[in-house]
Image (cartoon, rainbow, N blue to C red):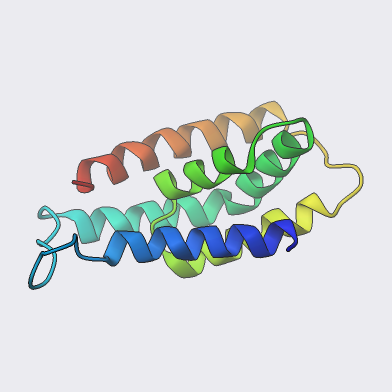
Length: 128
């Protein structure tokens, strides 16, 4: 199985775990705290602005020895929209196939860091 297929299967399994009810539980999961759908839309908009940077950043980190689990954990912490996550994984796969991945410039690193910090804060506030 290639890395992209493994990544997609891992993400799908993670999404299934997010929507699955705990053993013995009946009925739907509790509603998220008020304001979370607005926060999710904001996070999705922010992530859309930097998706290409994030994919390039993680492709380079993976090339330098980081673990795929770390890239997936980062995506889980900051990308709440399943369609956006699929686009990110496709971009990550495309960047991993590039022979020479250009490192992010300082402005790109700063933008990525700022958006990531805000996204993590918003997502964490809405997760049980």
